Length: 269
Image 1 (cartoon, one colour):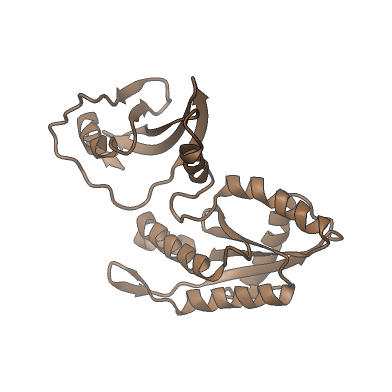
Image 2: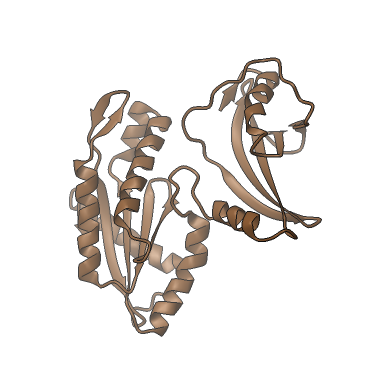
């Protein structure tokens, strides 16, 4: 988000205050607070609409019985980098509803609505331990968008975000919750975890994903563009010697490289 002045920024975020009781703007070094919301605020300048998607980070902290979830978004004011904080408050003494909502936000990628890296780091070791304890296999699909940098360079990052969000929707339609989960590992890289599913079943799922992306019609400003993804597939068990998130990602990264080497829009086994 880019604003000409602090006054314009304050006027624009005023519409968010019915959702977030506290909003703050900090300078780039996060040492000086430029603005903090108050109920008496009455901006005179018309709000500016927000378009596109913006990278955000989440943090959760307790403060005198209140649970605060802070969404931090980089913004630009008068050419200077600043930080917008949106703070949601929950009373830990009144029940778990607000806590559960905040916990869900903390493990969800705000752009794609997939799970995020935090969820991968927390859930993957649990799934590995459980499946190995039961002597079951666990399968993974690792994917990214072919030539995604060219999309960003030619059409802009907002268009790239739009494509990434649509790709995520394709994955969500094909990955059933009872089978596993899908997360955004970073950038345009997506990780699918499928406990207890066999290699043959997961290969079929990966090929359905590949075909669905390839056949989907993507539009940017009424321009039809073709998008494909490359996929790596791997099934492991307790004899594979893989026990950590880093080991899984390293293994899957090699599989994805093989798919790229074969010409992209491929599933590497």
